[in-house]
Image (tube, rainbow, N blue to C red; front, side, top):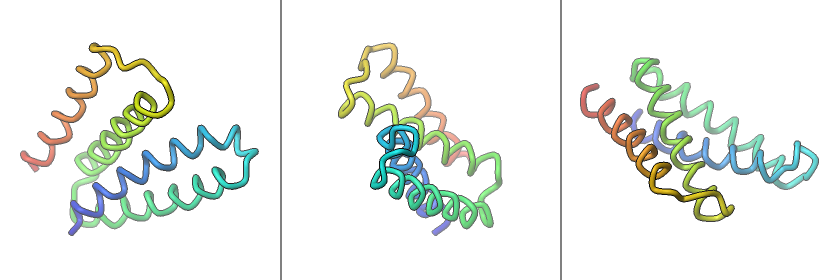
Length: 104
């Protein structure tokens, strides 16, 4: 259960990072509310998962999921570069996250 919560929390990190960008410096109400709610849920999920998963592993997986997810949103929806080197680097992050789970 802790791993499922951790993955969901990582996905929520993608949501809050994207909402933070869309909030225009916390000046737009709806994205700001989405940012705050998803940030709190993401942190609460991370805290829950860390009761069973070591902090180094849990935090790295959480950040990795959030970073890859946010980069993908940027590339797919926000017009950021989707160059081959960027994609290869994201695949390395994914490999690291999977490795942390496998060797936990």
